[in-house]
Image (cartoon, rainbow, N blue to C red):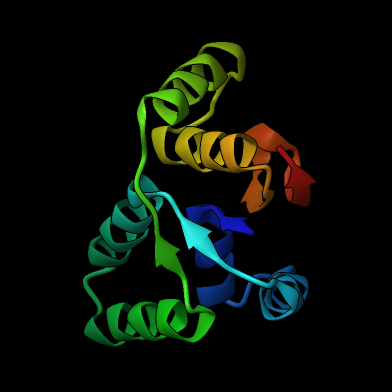
Length: 122
């Protein structure tokens, strides 16, 4: 399963969808992140300027056993096409979507540009 930064942020902030997100991660055989997702998640944590929040974010990724995987030209092309066709899709969300599509994995996100909370086959 590919996880988008929006899903990680919802977990960390105890969003109403956090329970469903947790169950999806626990049930996943494997959890992967695009490098852009990883960077975006920690970028957003740093904006909070809260050391405890940043530490909780790092612990969350550790518990999810999220693996950061390489992005290749195929994934970059899919991400570019996703940004061109999906209004409001962020760069990191486009790469999460592209990674899921290229690898044939479900995408866990809480991204309004992709339709809100969903575990979708990208």
